[in-house]
Image 1 (tube, rainbow, N blue to C red):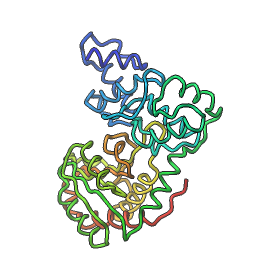
Image 2: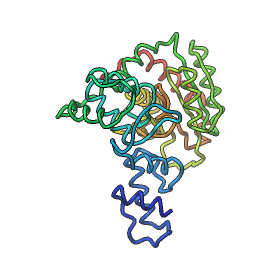
Image 3: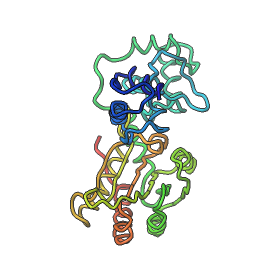
Image 4: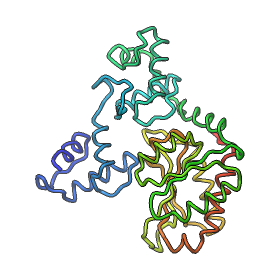
Length: 316
């Protein structure tokens, strides 16, 4: 707990007023503010995802050498590197703070362009060249966002669409129903039954899916709560536009069938959203009774939304 509070305070989140080693209301509020700033689930608990994000937030570009390794380096320094490459027109596929193959490709291309050794390592010389080359004014559009839309256009289409379906708990009946309908419509389906989000992302990437859909159930049954929460990747000022477009398509379907206020959309940086290479959507139902009573309608909304989305046009 002491380490958590120290990291929060270094990042500007005050925990003053709580006793040493105490997880008090000030510490909880600091965690909630930090989680909101990082597009994490805001629960005030320093769980594994929040703790990992706290560690990543401590890295600044230049603090360490950056290069492609396994496990991959993660941190705000990687995200800043990706952002600067994007501003210069070098595509990192996504700004996610993960030093993967696309970031390595952008790095070596940048090094070749500025005439320094193309060794795939971000050291002082590469950072100096970045500082010299970086434009004075940031572009409103990131090249990686534009490229993601272009890749999505190239790979989707009803006949060849490849979808990974993941059950994050309690939604097996919905997964089975939607898979049958999608298969009937010519979509290639693979399923993940792992509840671990990193594993789900790994399986979706291995399948080379065009789209990953994670469906889960939280047994809340609160009448005032939205009946479905729809999440897409948003982090480091980057938004997965294809995934957001699909969320909006599903929201329109739910409003058309069930009326307004039944769905809620948000951009998050959950592991499965951040680590998948394709547009990914997390659907979380908050009412078992609603899901069971309206399974046919819900399945049809998801199926129609996916097929419409796969042939639609995204403005960027």
